[in-house]
Image 1 (cartoon, rainbow, N blue to C red):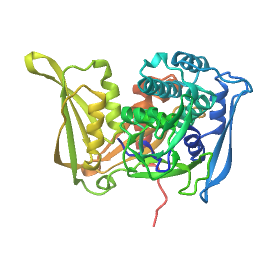
Image 2: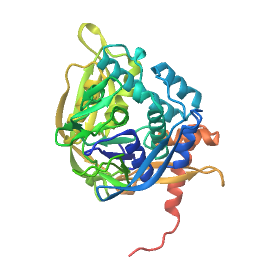
Image 3: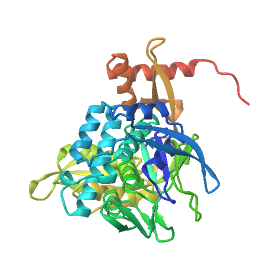
Length: 418
């Protein structure tokens, strides 16, 4: 993951629900208009969301309220929910994320009830509240750039709670079965017992499982902090979910000065039986788990079978998460790693404007300071592709223009700084 990559950390140590996460994202700067427009696009008369400031355990927070239609909601199957999302015409990244959340919910409920995902009646998680929460969070995440390619989101262990809760099928122990299956599917850590009541709901767990990888707060430049409150004001600890939003910070060795040595952990596996169409999603999962870089190399395995060696570079602290991503997203039966030394050039990121006046598009460029003052300037390809589509230019032309613009900006005299 490059310096400047959008990043976030979810603090779910007091639990998480759909409305709590949505409130935190709005508090962190997501557009309420974008959220309300996305919910309105579902075309369910009377369904809307509002947000107000509140306090939980002495802490200020955003409290989201879902306004429901007057008529009772019907029990939906997964196909019904996906049809609602398809009719809404949401932006592709938000639509894909919301659909993924509901698929996870359906699979978890199916496992809990011993049936297939397509046969599940969603009950609570398919009701109006869940539709508004999931679609609202999808729009908020997209607005904050957290659904963009390469965005890195980590999460704390989720407080599950304890005791019992009333559900459509009667009273169930906490955590409810769907939350446990979602934690297993997403590799999420749960903590329970110390906190009474249901602290993590199935909708909240599905949102986190679809978005984040378990792990500590990454090295990042913090841009905003958002806090979302639950419906109860609990006495044992503030009933809040927090979101820390920013950009990844470069390792210390990359923040200027001469080339420096550093440690790197190399994680590898050889795979010869994976559908080749899945490799882009595997590499994306490795980056989301904390890998600085990752790639595959063609090889020939036993009995002459073609395969790929997948390699990831990461810090030792995130090696378990990277290895877990390999196990979860590939068919491998084993992962190997080794500690290596590397020499790194100082590097940083900058944003330049490309295009004619009045129609400029912003593109991030990665800049490395080479020996003798030589510069290597490479635009972020995903941003170059977006800019090219907006400008009607070839992607190559955008990349060249971004590099020229950065070098030209360096030639402009700057005021002396003390």
